[in-house]
Amino acid sequence: MKLRPFSSQHRGMFISIDGPSGAGKSTIVRHLAQMLAAAGEDIHITAEPSSGPIGILCRELTESLTGHALACLYAADRYHHLEIEIRPHMERGETVITDRYVPSGLVMQRFDGIDSAFLWQLNSEADRPDLAVILEADPEIIAERLTARGPA
Image (tube, rainbow, N blue to C red; front, top):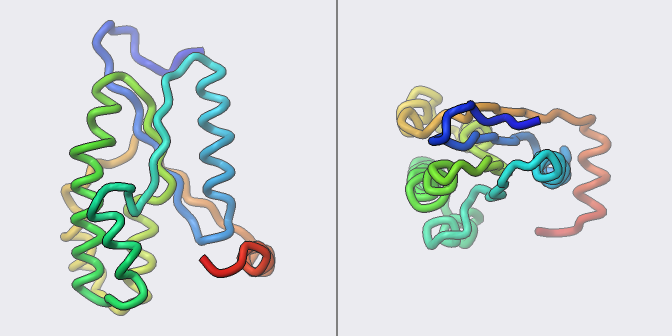
């Protein structure tokens, strides 16, 4: 079963998987990719922060940078990620699955005290996924998984 439209020129789908650390995002991304690939879809898996230069900077500075500066850095990574990785793969007709996207950033940056109106405006031009999945999990299970995983 193909998920693509019937036209010979098609744009791939964009799927985001969000949720708290330990909820099973990476597992769902892997299983979904396997299922879609088995159905004949071309798949590209990615994550946020991205593996690009801004994403690397995000990971390096997450512990020492807060507030508006961190929110802007993550948004810059998202827009760069869309431009250099996500959109090109979709233009080739691939289904792109990302492990974290806008919802994860909104939650984390609200915990950092940033006004939601500022965050919505900052991310207002980010592409909307064709399918957005937000996972939940029992807090005790998440705590067990994170403890077992150890420090990131």
